Amino acid sequence: MKAGLFEFALCSMSGRRSKFIFVYIILTLLMLLCFSVFFVTASLRAESSYGSDAVPDITVTMNKGGRNELISTSRADDIILIPGVSYAEPVYFGLYSFNYLKTNLTIVGIDPFAQQHSQAFEKAVMQHRNILTQERWMITGDKLAGTLKAIYNKDTFSFAKPDGTYLELPIAGTFFPQSQLMSASTVLTDVESAKEILGIPDGKAVQISVYVGNSEETDTIAQKLSVMFPDTEVTTKEVQLAAVSNLFDFNSGIFLMVFSISLFTFFIIVFDRASGLNMEERREIAVLKAVGYTPSDIIRVRFYETLITAVAAFATALPLALFYIHTAQAPLMKSIFIGYSYMRPDFILPFVFPAKEIVLTFMATIPVYAAAVIIPAWRASVTDAQESLR
Amino acid sequence: MIKFISVTKRYKDSVPVEDFSMEISAGETAILSGRSGSGKTTILALAAALTRPTSGSIEVNGKQTAKLPEEFASLFRRESVGIIFQNYNLMPNLSTLDNVTLPLLPTKTPFRQQRERAFELMEKLGIDNKAKIAAGRLSGGEQQRASIARALINNPPIVLADEPTSNLDAKLTDKLLEIFAGIKAEGRTLLIATHDKAITESGIADKIIRTEK
Image 1: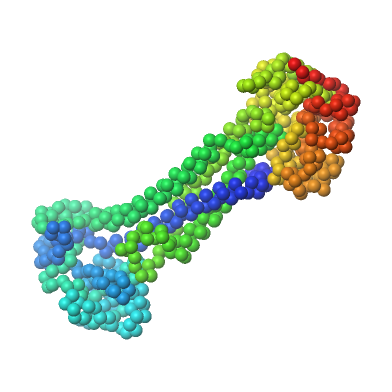
Image 2: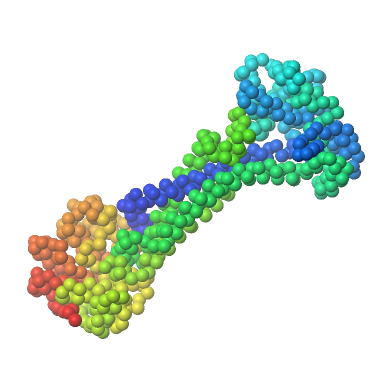
């Protein structure tokens, strides 16, 4: 680096500060937008991945006329006989409308004596062995436990059953899932209580979860299940996770549209700059040539100006994006991505630093901007200086 | 030495220089005299390799400059030529000192030496007290002197001046003639384009070259 030229670039920038401040603001906003998107998507991706271990290899549900119906638990006994199936169990879960917080609680009925397929549930059972001796109990996510304690100040909670009566359950403890969505709304309870709260009659379940020994056989077994039970909907884990991902992508698609418009605007500005310099800029380059600056010196000066602007924009945009996403919790942007129905009390975006995307953004933005500045400067530096000075 | 042989410069809409020849020896002071539009400025630009002739040959300080590539033309100017422009062409937002040191920035001259040389010249030209003031805020005479200091900072053997008195009053013109006498005394080749009688009749010139076609 030639210190003299770097110093000149700084002086030159301070002389034309309004222009550089404008470019700096545009670049900062663009990077802020990119970084914010990357932070939000990385956080949400991490959040959604926490629950993926609980998704069974195959899910069998009853579907009539497009409606989800309860499925007979006896089908689990037939399914387990299929070669390759290692385990099949009826599952009891559903949403309980908690009007006080204007939200839905996710009620999950589990058998504490059976193997738990979710690590979070397994941990919950291991931590609260006292439930093994109790007939009725509930374990809540730690955030929900704090909320209930703050509202009712007692160690039980009364659920309104579909028949209008109440079921009071003692809070046996709390569990700490990685997922804050789960922590904020999930209630684990015994199977009988879950069935009563959700209005599931005996012999029925919400779905049958099927686990296979060899994951390569999943599709074959799924096909067999479809043939065996033509009135059911058989979904593999892969399809189920893709459906969640598609929902997320649909929301991010809306954002992508807004984002594309911003990028498009940026490229129009870039194109406008690349297509020519104004008279004042041409004259300045001609003067530099007249006092002995070579075209490479001029390009170097412009490169330093670009670098200073870009690094300043990067250094501003990164902390701003971190503040916007992780301190302010991405107002507006979070709801675009996760949608209203996914809103949960106290949902905080987990901190994930998508370093690769951040570096890529920097590397993708700067060359475009640098080219927009350097190409016209280079053109001017190799053309007749006298014409610009006339 | 500056030597033009049958030089023609043609633009789209005009031919400012046509079949022009001249020869100025090293250390000589010459005046290009002629009315406005007679091609004086273009001849200076051709001598500085700021523009290329349409035809003819130009030799400056032993170098054929008519077809020099841009990179080499710039290096040639850095080493051999100082230009004093009619409208000064200073960077209005930079300080006087920064304007004067501008030609030294891409060179390997140490920073301290750049500043010393600039102050030495500014002191000689009486603008050392304006070092930190933005060039755009200097008076016409001060800008003229800053422009001269910038032209001389690289210690060039050839100095080209385009209508140097066009914006100066009589008193400042006398002061400028003193400066030019100093440049001449240092043994530099000086080519002044002017139609100001104060210069042409001052006796500073060894040679007066008419540019009328």
